[in-house]
Length: 217
Image (cartoon, rainbow, N blue to C red; front, side, top):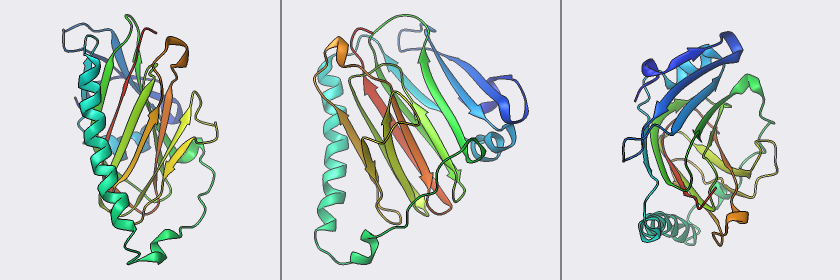
């Protein structure tokens, strides 16, 4: 699904692109919303294909298999750092504070129903100093993987608010893969809304994969 298929609401810096999203059973109980500056959205996401998979009846072992794959990739990347071949890459400058003037927001929201497995994949070019925030409906476990084809991305996770202090981050250098896995026991009261922030530490082209497992909310 590309941006041209979305309905556009608003204009200028208060633009939203909205599209209904079907789950694997064909139910349109979800929406994907993109918000921010219209010019910035078009520049960064015009050619992006939003690949979304939602299965409200998925078994927990399906989520476990996804988590295993993400963890194996993360383990391989982090294990390679132990060789200490490039310790200078361990140090990166502090990031400036994000603002509405350098950010785009992408929200997958559920408008009906409850409890789902969510998976989203997209590819885009991100200028230096720009951020994209992506969020999911209520989940108890989640992941995000940023695979730069060029340049350097940083990845952060905040819970329930874009302005909350990040609970997890990955700031590997260059085209090393940044990954975050987060979550715990899946009780109904332990659900949360994840906000992943992808930051262009340098100008970058990146493949982003993220998803989550929800229970009964």
